[in-house]
Length: 478
Ligand SMILES: N[C@@H](Cc1ccccc1)C(=O)O
Image (cartoon, rainbow, N blue to C red; front, side):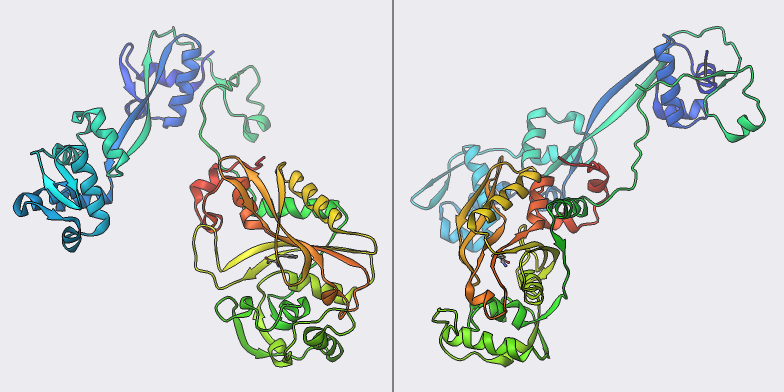
C-alpha cells in the first residue's frame, strides 16, 4: 500500500537516477519533508534508496579576512625582517602590536625561518606563505583544492571555520505497478464527519523516519533550576519569603553587625540611593550599643561611634540576608524555617563569573537546639538533592556568623567550586533584634549553581536570548 506522496515520488522521479533532495522537491512538486517521509517509506519497501552524506564546508573568519587584506602576521614580520635584518625584540615591539608579534614569531619559528637568541631576532631561512593562497581559495569557496592539513591548521588558528551539512540523495530502484487505491495519511475531522474513510486503508506510522524538529514551549533552563531549588526547600518544610530590592543599610548591613567602616559598605561595592528612611528607634538603639560596646551580649562590639544616618540610607540590597534578618526580627520566636530566592546587586565588573545583578538562594533556621552540624547536614542534603554529591566546607568569614563556612561542590573538569557562604548567626546579631534561639543561615549563588548544572562556562549565557541554545536545552536536565 502506498501513500499519495509515495505515488507522487514514484511517478515523478526517474528510475535509477540519483536526486538531491532539492532537485526531487522541484521535480515532484511536494515539500522536502514530504519527499523525505515518502522516500524513507519507499526504502522500507525496497523501491528506493536514501543516502545521507555529511559534507563539510569552510568559511574564512573575520580575522582571516583581515589577514587576506593585510597579509598574515608572520608574512608581515618576515618582510620587515628581510628589510631590516637583525633586530631586538624590544625594538620589534615598537613596530608591531604585541599579540600580533607573538603569533608571527611563533609561526616563523615553526617554519624554521628565524632564530631568537639573547632577545635578538634573526632571519635564517627563506620560507613561503602558501597559507595565504589557500585562505584565498577558501574565501572563494574552493576549499576542495586545499590540503586537509592546511585546513586543519587554519581552523586551529581560527582563520577558518568548519560547518557540517547533511545532504540527502534519493534514488528510485524500481517502480511497482502503481495501485491507485488511496491511503489516508492524516485523519481530519472532515474525513471522520463525512465517513469517507470507509473502505479505505490507513497509512502505517513509521517511527524511524527522520522528522522535522519541533520545539515546544518550555520553562527557561535557569527558571527551571530556580523552581527545583524552591521545591526542595518547600518539601523540607521551609516558608518562602520575599523582600524589597531597596533596603535601608540598617537591614542590609547594621542589623547584621557589619561595621560601618566595613569595605563591603564602600561606594565601590554597593549601589546607594540618595534617600533616607526612618528605622525603628528601639532596634536602632540596641544595634547602636551592640556595635559600640557590645550592649548586654558579652561582646566588646566594634568600638567607635555608630551613626544612625548611615543606617538610614537606602541601598540596592547586596545580599538576600537583608530579607531573612528582617523576617527573623519580625518573627523572633522559634521555630522558624524560611528561604528567599531573589535578585541582589553589587558593583561588580562584568566577567564570566560576575554580574552586577545576580540571584541568591538564602535560608535560615531558627530553633532552640540547632547548631553548626545541622547547618552542614542541611546544606549537604540540599546539594545532594540538586545532584551534587561531593560537598565540602571551607572555613570562611562573615561579620554576622560564627563559625562561618564557604560550601564548595566538586564538578568534574572544574574541581571544587565555591557556591556562597553559611554560618551560625552571632549573638551580636540575634540578641539586639530579640531573636530567641540559634540561627543557621546561608546564602548561595544560584546562578553559579545553574551554570554548573547546565554545563555553562559563562554566567552571562543564562541571560542571553539565544534561541538556538534554548531550543537545544532539554526540558529536564539531570
Ligand atoms: N550574605 C553572604 C552569604 C551568607 C549568608 C548567610 C550566612 C553567611 C553567609 C554573601 O552574600 O556572600
